[in-house]
Length: 155
View 1 (cartoon, helix red, strand yellow):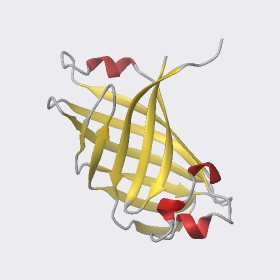
View 2: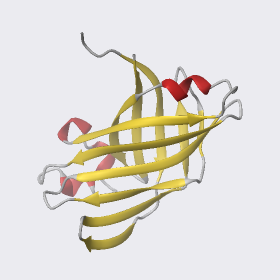
View 3: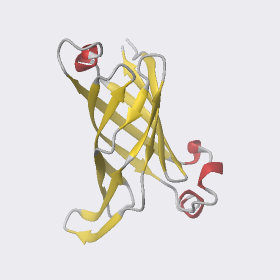
């Protein structure tokens, strides 16, 4: 039996320059605040609240381990808490373009690996409470000023 997915939404996160903690026992720590964004899709639309961040660790092999927490406010006013982990692996030849704000938007996301596993927490009795029972997967893309995700529910 294979895995089937259903598109939930596309989400763009506005991320100002990150804080570089530097080398630590687990890897190089980077803290990237999330200050806003948009959500648009067949299941959820709304805005990303100024509410969280990514507490990323870059391992010795260059793989980025993401640890994101943020909140979405759906168009109907429902607040949705989102947490997700994931992995980002950027080949050395793509890194200069990905990390350059002038070229990042032109980089095809197939040139690097950027995946996430969102989970949701929503108040019971709200129109989006069904998200409490969903496991999701996402594909990511770096963009100027942040990141963009396409998020799918696993059926």
